[in-house]
Image 1 (spheres, rainbow, N blue to C red):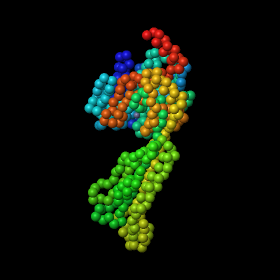
Image 2: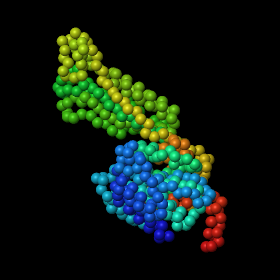
Image 3: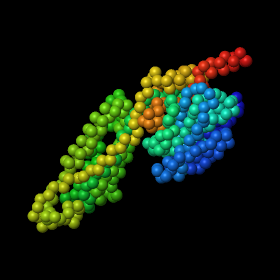
Image 4: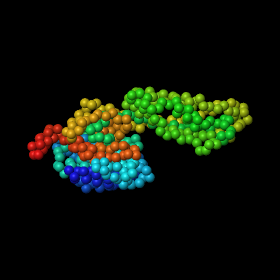
Length: 412
Ligand SMILES: [Zn+2]
């Protein structure tokens, strides 16, 4: 089947050559829209660019039903994490493996998924397949907390049975659960000054260090993990830092467990910050903000360090029952494609988190991309071909597909 292999590879390479970091997907989306039109479909762009401050919106392709079959939403995301220097990638093809020449991020996450969906659109038309209503969604800004999918018009979900996002490794992998993620952005305010005059100062970096040392880290329980990802403070060795900043996250498959941890973390941060205080003499009504309030000393004041904690739910988790129709249908489709289904509980979020929150039961399916975000990112063409077959089986009305395969066998 040289044709299938070539169009998958061609679309993957064309799209991966165009850098499309989150909120800067315009050039890649232009190329994608052209390809969609060449296949005989109409790509519609929504208003997500304006609401998110990006340079393009989500692309939606509605494919009205031609017969019986499930009404499905398919999704893949157009944005990628930043590649080194934002340079276009030169790809290296070795058998079925495609990678960036010299290694590194080239955008297989999630352009392998995008190329698979283009192939499915092409096959539906060429082979005049019978199917129910289908919606293909190419999202922007997925890598930044799935913001693009969050902007999709809720109207697109109406009348659909289920969603399938292509954003994982092997096409036999069906992701039925993903965690809820909470981000903490922590800013400690102290009192800055010269290192040689520490009196009545509060070293914000030191307060932050004490705080972070008391926060839970790594795996907390079978459902939950925590990570300190960013910390910044200080300008020079001889300056007492006045502020310190950190970013910390927790993710969990159990909402109640996560709530418990979140409350404890906030309590810990507030406790440490309260412990760090200075006693200072000051004049009634004078500010206590820094070096300038020596005062005449009629009032003793206590000045605490202060903290701003910005807690945000990045995405909400989901858990689809193994017996749910979308899982059963995909399992059957994976088997028909000659693979062994594998049910997966994921540790990261995807657009499927958003679809589930909107009420559309959705899972993630692998599409042949490996080593996402890392120095060894690669795509596998055989897995991408298999993913196309799995989706075509999933689209087909079960009775129709049984007839087709019986005929196919007889003809061979
Ligand atoms: Zn992805």
